[in-house]
Amino acid sequence: MLIKRMREWELPERLVTPESVFLNRRAFMAAAGASAAIAGTGGFAGITGARAEEADPSADLYPAARNEMYKVDRPISEEQYNLTYNNFYEFGSHKKIYKAAQELQIRPWEIKIDGEVEKEFTIGIDDLIRKVTLEERVYRHRCVEAWSMTIPWTGFPMNKLLELAKPLSSAKYVRMETFHNPSVAGGQKGNWYPWPYAEGLTIEEAANELTLLVTGAYGKPAAKQLGAPLRLHVPWKYGFKSIKSIVRFEFTSERPTSFWEQLQASEYGFWANVNPNVPHRRWSQANERVMGDPTYERSWETVPTLMFNGYGEHVAHLYKGLENEALYM
Ligand SMILES: Nc1nc2c(c(=O)[nH]1)N[C@H]1C(S)=C(S)[C@@H](COP(=O)(O)O)O[C@H]1N2
Ligand SMILES: [Mo]
Image 1: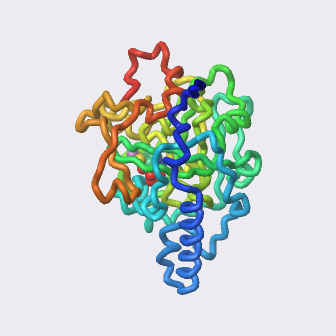
Image 2: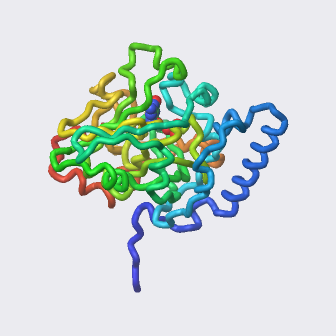
Image 3: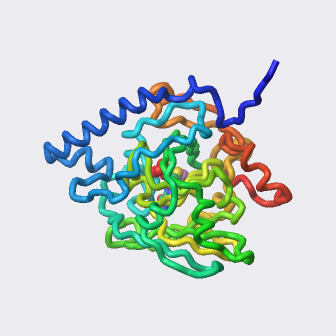
């Protein structure tokens, strides 16, 4: 008997939200958005981040073809839930920041590539998007606060950005930075945070096939509260690594200090790989509450958290020889 060992992200099709359900919902949401715009309430448009007067120049690239390599064993989180339950401290230190985030202007949007690269340069988001091929990938997202969602991202492998950036061999890390503009992002007026938000990966992590630079979600350009026009998603790490609204990639030989690490290094480290066996200083990481999924949410059910959030087969090798580091916080 031939037994094909399934990779953890290749779980059976029947466990994924049926495409038809997803597409029907997408059609429904689009219709709801259109009627809100017509009614001039702005209510729904305020949630999606799609204002009538701001046509997204990349809209023609959506929906991108789904990469069927990446499957998960959970239904896709409800879009409306995902769009109204967010961490984006630039707009407030609570989950209901979606309205405030609509103030962010996402065009023009310049991205700086600098540090230890062959040649530093700046590129507009639309030039960048047209140099790569967008694809859709359904990924698990696990916040360090012990909740999770399952999201159909659109984006491109970060490896493509490395090809464009041409880091020197001396560059061991890439440091990423979010915009800094306290006049639109009220949270940035609070000087008790080390703005701008920053994160970092090793070059090997950035080059891993799973590491995705995200431009969209749910088959369209990303809503502002999700970190438009360009954010990271590293699905085997706690959510805070997945920096939003990136304006700079700096290549460096020194390990960067990230936003949360600077605030509280004893609780939020550089590596932050998901591990159910290593508790946070103040709570267990053994389980997670599945958000935006009616089945789980109604019952307030939690499910066990998986090592490397279920992506160990792809990434465990990155940490060989680093056993003495704080890999899991
Ligand atoms: N710039 C920036 N990026 C950020 C954050 C933030 O506050 N600011 N929060 C992080 C955290 S803690 C999580 S869980 C995810 C949340 O992404 P989501 O709102 O799309 O679920 O974004 C991450 N990226
Ligand atoms: Mo998070």
